[in-house]
Amino acid sequence: MRRRRLVPLLFLTPALLLLVIFVLFPVVNTVYLSLLNQEGEFTGLSNYAELFGRENFWNPQYLLEGKPPPYGALIHNGVWILIHLPLSLFFGLLLAVLLREVKGGAIIKSAIFLGMVIPLIVGGMLLRFIYDERAGIVNAFLRLVGLGDLAITWTAFPQTVLFALILGTVWIWTGFAMIVYSAGLEGIPVELFEAAKIDGASRWQAFRHITIPMLRPSTIIVVTMTILWELKIFDMVWIVQQGGPGGASMVMAVLMYLEAFLYIPSNFGTASAIATLLTVMTFGFAAYMVYLMVKS
Amino acid sequence: MKHMVARLKKVKRFTILTHVLGWAVSLIWIIPFLGIFMASIRPLPEILNGWWNFETFNPTLRGYIDAWNHPTAPLSGALLNSLIVTIPATFIPIFIAALGAYAFARFRFPTRDLLFFAIVLLQTIPQQMVIIPIFNLVIRVGLWNNYIGLILVHTAFALPWQILFLRNFFSTLPVEVEEAALIDGASYFKIFYKIVLPLTLPALASLTALQFVWVWNDFFFALVLISSPELRVTTQAIAVMKGRLFIDWPVITAASIIGMIMPIAIYVALQRYYVRGIVAGAVKG
Image 1 (cartoon, one colour):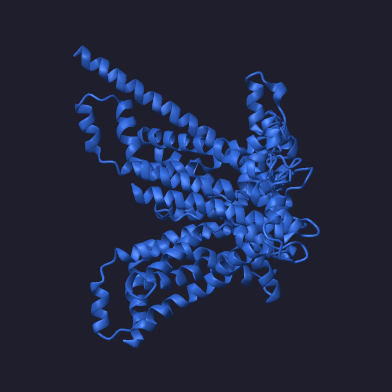
Image 2 (image 1 turned 90 degrees about the vertical axis):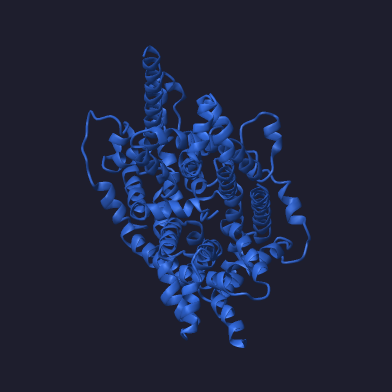
């Protein structure tokens, strides 16, 4: 009997050990560091208060006055969610529904999903390339439709860099929403549509009243994961402009890295405060989504 | 009859519309990939003139050769480094997670559910939340700028979602065989190794595909934990190659293509398992 009690412990020890050393302890330590100043003295929440007084973290003034970015990292992440999430859901669902009916749809889906497979560093390079003033296909398209005057390197200017990157992530990440929705569509019983058809429902009515509600679990997964990525985005922003120009594409993860590892002197307190806020947000969203999932 | 024809026409129009729309949207998605491929095999002036223009077309492998032998970030070394990190950082966590998940699926012990819930929660922790203490720790124990440190961090970070995924999988396996083996006197570890793991192969394939691609594609952990030029992994090398002002497109696009061959190959080879894992929610945040 004693032996039986030891067995699960033996199976669990390697995992628990690694999790405590490399995840749990660091999390607690980061929270602690966020309460210290540069000299290592305990200063309570002053790092957090100071963050909200900084233009590269919190600058709603420009937004309210209708000026171009920088609005600060926190707001940029929020803008990212507001623009990217609906577009990603829309295109993901559209492609999942469309490509089901299209010959060769499976191959097209695999190609679209490539954005989820390639390194995000490469994804960022791809974005930089398609937005290039001379080599980029975006500007070629603008010239084709007679808007050649607008041709610029879209990632090089504060007015456009944030929105160019956000639209770019739609292109890169939509494959995820598409694949999850595709799987969800497969799970809807065909009888439902047949019954609706007999009752005289139109294609649109069937879509609105059967497909959408039945896809609710898929939507919850897509929304959760996408929001987490939007909050934590780093690689693509880093490779394109490192948060620039002039902080116009600064996001929380990039600012955290700059504060901790690039700026001299490094500022672990501020960086830890950013990381902690980021974690509180991801936790909040994830918990809310789990709650929705359990409820339905 | 007339009604039937009208209806058929309507169905046909719908089919044509979906096909045109489907292929058009797909084209938008695929063009950038075509673009970097064309850029990777053409000289810089032709790229700046638009890779879609073919008035002059002098294909060259200059980009690939220069990326391979890059003076500060040669891909020849970076690819090997990525493999040295990725292979152990793929298989070690899967084995450790399988052990842990088995304990959660098959044994009753105090605080089991609480512990499991706590581990699942760790899944959403961002890399930024752990990196400063990890950085301090690996420096103190001499594992900074050392692959062992990077592999350990990747391993720990993979455990929560892999334990969740595998516990769910183990719960679907019938216990009778394991119980019979126990009565026959097999040890718990032997049962795990000889009976359970072989039945788990499809789930292990999903985990292998996802974890391999995740580690190969990672940039953030490598950026902080590896600093010597000769130790840089592929993602770091690509980032170094992109100059701040001047961008040598043939080199950087060739490097991008080389850097994505491996994850794409894994995805193509294990597509079924890859997608199954993604849909089951086994995605890293």
